[in-house]
Each structure stands twice: as structure tokens, then as C-alpha cells.
Amino acid sequence: MTEHDNDHAGDVEVPGAGVCPRCHGTGFFIAEEQGIERATRCSCRRRPGTERLSRLDIPPRFRHCAIDDSPDGRGFISLTHPSLEIARGVARRFVNDYPAERQGLLFMGRCGVGKTHLAVAILRELALTKGASGRFCDFHEILRQIRESYNPVSGTSEMKLLLPICRAELLVLDDLGAEKPSPWVQDTLHFIINQRYLRQLTTLITTNYLDGPPRTEGGRPPQPGGEETLAERIGHRLRSRLFEMCRVVPMDGPDYREALGRC
Image (cartoon, rainbow, N blue to C red; front, side, top):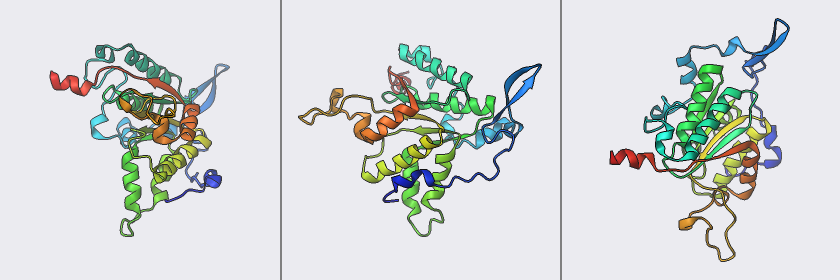
């Protein structure tokens, strides 16, 4: 994929075969009980928990993440920064309110504060408690797979890799901005985000790049230490789209990996 036709991005066919006629793929239907209408989980989502989790493509390191735990195993409050407890509360409310709450979350903070942990914990809990479907996607890894698809002997295609990501009910897009922001990378990312935006699908995103103003006239990055901003890594147009799709959840605090190394 060297270039996507943005004018026709919304025309990509997302197969609808097999969509449940009762809930229309949402996982819930409205049922009346004693004169009161309630959202009820559809039987099409009532698979055993292990089967639902296996469909999420969560890497082994993150398969046991839980909202009320943290990467260091001692609970988020032990990480001694208020923003981490706030982020945990946002994650809990998101799970409680889903599917009424469909706006995604953008976890933003430096390395090792638990962004991926929380995003995966949300995905796991919604799969187990509400029968939601979804998948974990490391952006760097999907780009690697797409590059390999250009090899004639790979036996796959770029669109075959992208469509499951574009149509997943819930998507964890991990480590956004980690790949060097070449035109090809920006084009691929725009395709994924735009497809999900048009279909109003929920996306949970993590990034190590913080938000901030554009570069100064002198060309120096505004972030401390000369670090790039999120807009500089993915482009201002995509940043704007993400901020419409997602609620920003800032996370700060010590790197739990370093803390574990000192224990």
C-alpha cells in the first residue's frame, strides 16, 4: 500500500456475512421485562470466557491484565501519582457504561506508566463481562506484516491484514507514533483510523508521545528534552481526528519497569 485513495476510503467493503439478526452485531438487544426495557446481552456473544479471550490476539505478557491491578502487581495507587488512579477510574467507568459509551480512550504518557496494561484490561473485561469482541494490535507489528505481504510468497495481502483491524468492535491500537512518520506510515494509519471513524467503532489507543503546540519558528520541539509531540509523529489532521474519536487520558508517574529493576 503505497497510497490510499482517501476519497473512497469509506467505500471499502466490510463483510457483513454472519452478523446476528437479533442484535445486528452489537452484542445487545432491547428486551422488555415487566414493562421496563433493558439492554440484554445477545446469546451470540455467550461463548466460554477462554474462547472469547483467545479471539482478542492479546500477547501472553498482557493476558492477565486487570483494571484493579497494575503492572507491578501492587495496585495503581502504589505507583504514587494521582493521574494513575484517575486513569483507572476512567477505565472502570468505561467498562461499566459500555456499550452506551462508545467514545474511545487515548492513553497518553511516557514509557512504563501502565498505558497498555489499562487498555488491555478494558478489552479483557468487556469480553468477559459483556461478550464484546475485539482485538489487540501493535501498530509497529501490523506495519511489519504489511511490508511482508508485498512478498509474493507470503500468501497474504495488505487488505486481508487491515480489514479485521478496521472492522473490530473494539480495537486496542498500541504504541501509536512509535514508527518513523514516513508518508507511507501516515497513509496506513489514516486508512485504519478513518475506517473506524466512519463506522463509529470504539478504539483504545496508547502513545508515548505527549500533546503540545506545533514547533516554534526556530524549529525546536516544544517538549522538554527536545521530544516530538504526538502531532509531529502522526500529523495534525490525524491528531484532530483522534481527539474527536477518543477521550484523552493523561498518565504520569515513575516507570514501573525501572522500579521493579530496583527491587
